[in-house]
Amino acid sequence: MQKIIRISLVIALLATVLLSACTKDSNTIPAGTDIRAAIAGNWLVNEQYTKNTYEVTLSKDTASTDGVLINNFGASGVNVTAIAYLSGTTLNLKTNELLSNGWVVNGSGTLSGTSKIIWVYTIHDGANQINAQATYLKQ
Image (cartoon, rainbow, N blue to C red; front, side):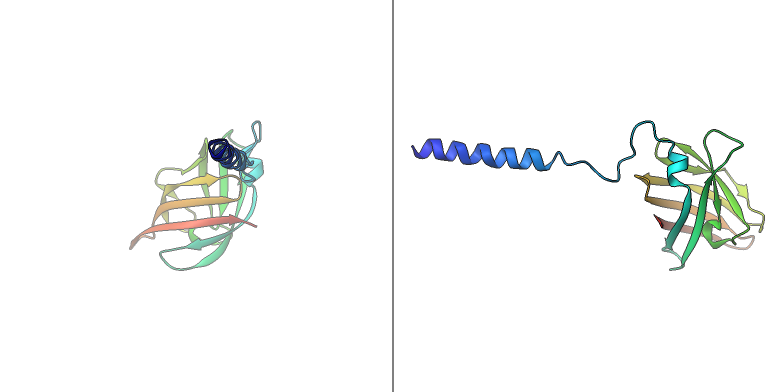
């Protein structure tokens, strides 16, 4: 009798673990979603190197099928736009992109669903190169 109770408890425990592991991740990108449209909008940025917090705006680059425009990348200014290209869940900045403020940027970001991006990038402002990491959170 005790063996049946133990087996029943083990089965119940396993069923609980398996069923709880099957909950849907609310941050998952649904199949068929235009990710560029889903990530368009305002994002709050926490940049680790400078400890700055600022906002950027992401929008679809209508001149390409995979481009994303990022206004104020690296706190470069609201009228300064960087271009990144989306491949899967990775955003790659245009290589050695010269921004209109004179900065040269390189790097990439990894999407976590449609509400978070972790960026690793460099900015060369003409005198110094900054190696940075930033977390973008969708507003």
